[in-house]
Amino acid sequence: MSYILQTNHLTKIIDGKELVTDVNIHVEKGEIYGFLGPNGAGKTTVMKMITNLWKPTKGTVELFGKTLETTSYEALKRMGSIIEFPTFYEHMSGKDNLQLHCEYMGYYNKGSIDEVLEMLNLREAANKPVKSYSLGMKQRLGIARAILCKPELVVLDEPTNGLDPAGMKQLRDLFKMLCSEYGITLIISSHLLSEIESIADTIGVINHGKMMKEISMKEISEMNTAYIELAATDTKKAAYVLAEKMELNNFKIIDDSKIRIYEVNVTTQEISKELMLNDVEIISINKHTETLENDSGGGKIMLKLIKLEWKKNNIGKYIRNAIIMAALLCLFVFALAFLGIANDPDGTLDAAPGTNTISSPIELFTSMTFLIFTSVMLASFIVSAYKNKTMNLMFSYPIKRQKILASQMLAVWSFNFVALILTKLAIYMCVFIGAKFMQSSFAIDFDIGSLSFYIQLILKSVVIVSMSFIALFVGMAMKSSKATIITSFLLIFLTQANVGDFTLADNAIFPIILTIISLGFAVLSVYNAESKDLL
Image (cartoon, rainbow, N blue to C red; front, side, top):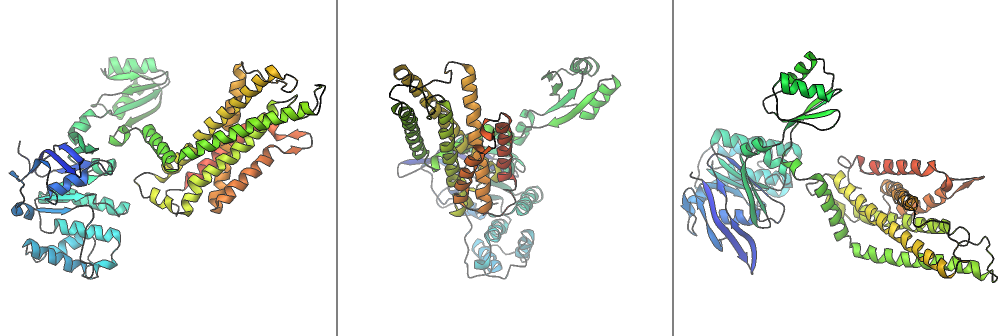
């Protein structure tokens, strides 16, 4: 098979560092080739070599059936491109820049400039200087210039940068039209799966400078795990109808009420009709299709985001602080116990904290400390990020804002949940050991060997750490890190408040209600993140 573009073992080394290694690309004439990979994967490096801006250290590029050489000027005449970002003569108008491009390319078609300006919605701005253009307008002007001379091959490096969703859709439609009506071959790089899979005929995946896979969308469609999910009151009867009446074999009973049908040649309407004819009651029936985006693994992405939050916020600093707090809390509990026995030389127990109810001060002081500490971390990770504008950078990435905020909240929550449990266990263990030597000082009122002890430990930790989401919501609403921290102090007073003989902290229902409320505030903190202006 002949290709309009082909690279053979393409490798680029700069200052001893391999940017890309052994890259093989195969682009057929008249197709849209999606070049997919994360930022820094090597897409731009490959495109620079394809357009002859950089020379390969090893390997070759074949364009239009010929090996690209240093002097392959004729091949470049048949190409259009945007690499990294389009550059212009800023003092000139958009139209003048396009005319200048035609002069350099030796292309003289009277109506072509007006045609591309119309295609890219730039007619009204055509005579304005480029320095007055927005980022999105410059991007569209760059694409207009790339397709202006009706090239056979167009190479576009992240062409939708700076465009809003409507502009992105317009470009996708334009690319399809150029391919179908003008026979132009396009190679388009992107880090967005959804953008690539919606327009490409073939997808090449690159990561860490190496080609991972090259696959056609037709193959992907044949490989996808589309299925119909059926929920019925009687799955055994439904399975019988599918197998015996409809002669379907490719289905699986998931549980007592659900069946997944993987047959590609049957519709939901046909299944519904046959089941109703055989008196099978249908609860629901839906078709599901897993795309490339689904295949990337949402859980893995969230875990990666959480790890990145820990990394960029220097989690080591917080680990040190947590260890110091745990040590101080342990010493504090020991001091309480010692003061209790010091005031009673004869060893008689009294009402001093740490004598007859040692677990109460442990729970109180660890809860107070970690509620404040968690709120401080949330203020640092999220509220301060709005104020110092680093959240602007975070929201510029191709990730949902809600997912970014959720990862930040989970990063703080999971860290403090584990730290609180470990701190409590360390203190309880110290008290347990201390009781072996000073039983009168450390009156044990807990059973460290029972399962219920650990269940309560976990549940109480969940409640305390989750309460910090209330403080976060207040801090975000007031645009203040201090408000987040102050709210955490107020929450301590609230949870330890006495109303007559009634103490909120000792009420069994209150922690459950408080956790539900806290999670509600967590949801509210991310609810309108997609549409809301930055703080």
